Length: 258
Image (cartoon, rainbow, N blue to C red; front, side, top):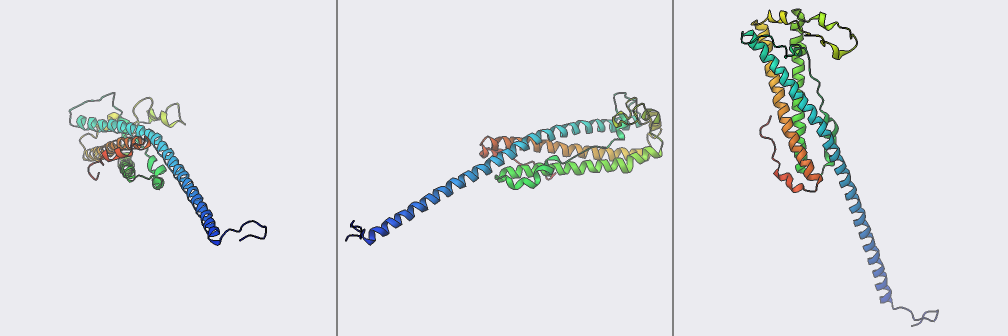
């Protein structure tokens, strides 16, 4: 059979085969395009995840440094509690290296990692890494609660005791730097040490010392666990970022609820 142009006409079956071939090619092209697009999207998601985890590593380093400073400060505070207690029993005397006026001060705390990463947990793909991060966030919240309890003790019990008994040393406090907070007590003890010793052995001071000792040790316990959780999280982040996610199985969760 010839077409009107004089050229042989294709049989119907050949047209159908040609059409099917065209359709198959189009479908294959679409599938390849979808796969390439899917791969590109997955790669972008992975790159965003790695960028997030690298930011977390940097922030975790700063948070870890602050936690270690807090541990050092609370240890010094606990040393003061023990010093005063031993003095009250006649087992010690004034120690010029002790910052007795730290009895006044509260602690500043901030849940930096929770604040910045709790809401972004869904951007992390690996459940093992999420578990390790959740453990850190939990420990961070325990530190927050412990320090808030510590601050409440200072504000509700210790400072009223000092004020009521006239233990603040205004001659030291009112120095030549009236507008600078960090200069309070720069020339001596904010607390009048001699007046403080007059309360040694009193039930009120003994009970305050117990509360301070209890609260400080709880803060130190929580901070110590946070330090352990930080070590785990740092290791987990290194593994995942370096493409060694299988090693996450080797990181065990901390023992105990607290």
